[in-house]
Image (cartoon, rainbow, N blue to C red; front, top):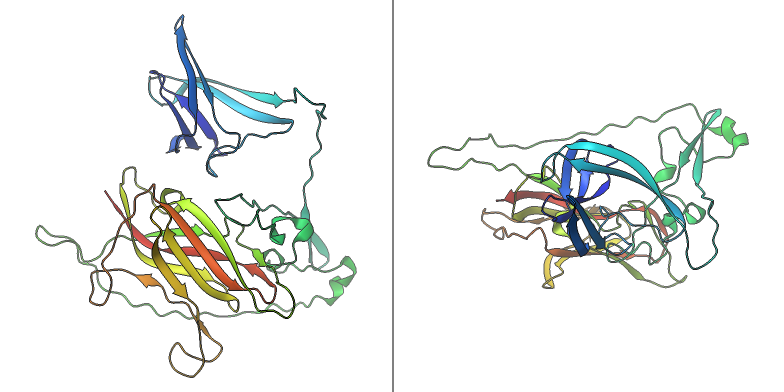
Length: 356
């Protein structure tokens, strides 16, 4: 199970569930997308027939191919009526062939690569970006150039250390020098005071979360609009709160309490990001990029500040609020695409706590 597959599980009483397995573990229970057509037991053998859409209901649900293809299977039977370690297993492959039209049974596949020059040698890397359909994101619907190698104009994949996108006969032009830069950090902290019989602990354990508006592309292109015009582009993504990138997910929790929300948005095109409760339409957080115009703190000329949304019990802050794991969220990024910008990112990230 090292490839973390999608699994359909039938318990001893006929209960059907779907899971994203982990290596040697039961993994995560997925939102149900199957419809049970029949459930029969004859001679001690249970036969369950189910149906579902070919497209997966989430990135963790398997999407079945709709053309001639091969599906690799692992089948297993458990040792108890509920999900447990299998007592027997086997593997197989399922060949999908057309039944109504003629089709090639050995349909060719292709793989795209980027080749980098590293001194006198070349390194080849597979170019693979998964641009997902709506409602998860807009990358596929907008035909973003970063989705395909053939239309990729540049970005993070051109910035590997010591890798250069040059012609083979230009290797002698690559300098031997390597730039070195330094970062300096200053940390402020308060001493932790453990909980007592009468007082809670002074601090809570905060967990990181992230919502990728660009839906795993993380290197998209902001396409230039018509020359000579000023334009504002947008990308939108929708996701249940439980399917965000959540850290240290407990086995049982009923609410998520965000305390910090910070947009990740690149200058100089970044204008604003918004996050909504898509079930109610309520605005959760809106952050506008602040471009410096003077010499004051956070107003230095040509510098950009992107302040976070913060909740807490301290004076001057809004009281924390909670959302359910099944709450649908909608995130929007606004950007100036009067000029083309490569290697862009769009995401919400922050800190939160789990409520029981």
